Length: 160
Image 1 (cartoon, rainbow, N blue to C red):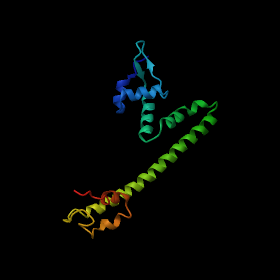
Image 2 (cartoon, one colour):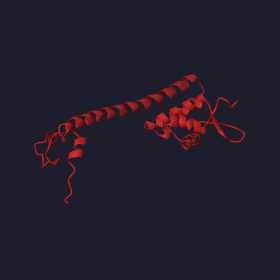
Image 3 (cartoon, one colour):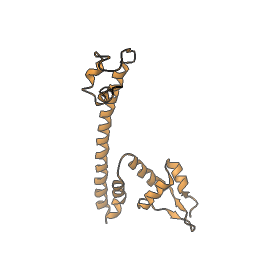
Image 4 (cartoon, helix red, strand yellow):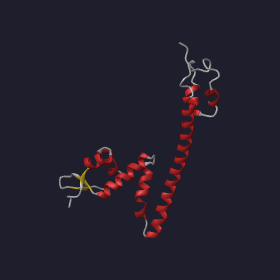
């Protein structure tokens, strides 16, 4: 019965996490282990897939409550049709969050790329890296367009 099952440590190693993390998800009711007569937890491939999905969603910023609601939605309904509609709504909500994250990351990528290109222009500059030391630096003008360049360039130097 337990011959095709893995212990919690094996699953943790396989998924790049800790046994404590997997126990936590079990304590939260997201996965149910089979146990030997001695109490050792054993998991099957379906549990590994479930853990992998939980870890991926958590790593992507979804809350434990979001994950729990998704994991438990199907069983809350009496018919496949009702279940399907509810699960689809949950999935679409998660997709909305992912699309918003993708848009934020795309904006950040564009800003970091622009900042990288601007900073490359300073590689051969012998002037001190301050507004006073390099008043004609192109980055002085770009800080108004880039929060990243403002972070790098606008910090006031403390007096010695």
